[in-house]
Image 1 (cartoon, one colour):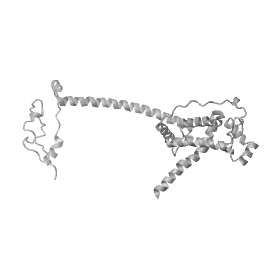
Image 2 (cartoon, one colour):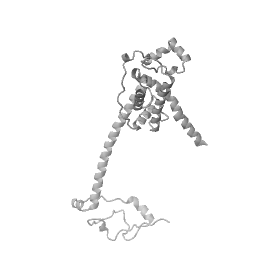
Image 3 (tube, one colour):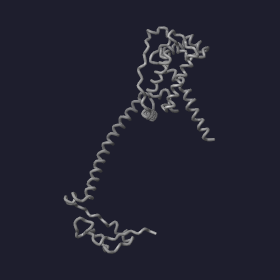
Image 4 (tube, one colour):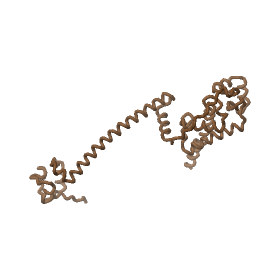
Length: 277
């Protein structure tokens, strides 16, 4: 059953207007005011109805609350349109700056736009890290017995007979560059303590959700790298006996993949296996 609609017109149409009008309805609406149209008639006359153009005298604008409300809404719409235009302009400026930053990063790292963009999004979402004091930079002249002051010193040593012999017989050969101030290689216990400290830092980053399964040492934020360098150099000063913390960076680059495999990749696979059981 269709709902009924009341199309009846008041006996006194002048009540719809502040001032009586000789023709309160358009000519197209010819249904007697005392008789409600049927649904078919309403459907036929609906397209013909045209709302009259209302013109309000100035004195009526001051006294009619409905006209005041209409005027207020018109002003509000105009204001919102202006604000919307301003916000669009600001967004466009920020988007251009963001795109420029991504393009510069791509040129610097040689990576594609998608990867760089994802990296920037991760960095923007990370909480701000506390500002750390600068690391003390040891001077080469103060440690003349240190053999591997630069990464090049280490690479060149590999080509020597001593380096080849170490590679064949020393189980700690890959970390032979870790040495004390007298150039003596660190013992196994000292090396393990350094690695334990480094993994402890990564666990802290993981618990705070600052790194995830997609993070690599290269993509890790500069703030996290600085925090790791600072803690290792503070707890184990021998890791900083070299140029530009290269020994700490090499340690992290060599050992972060195994940490990632254990605490991200394997954990994810275990969760997927449990979910399928």
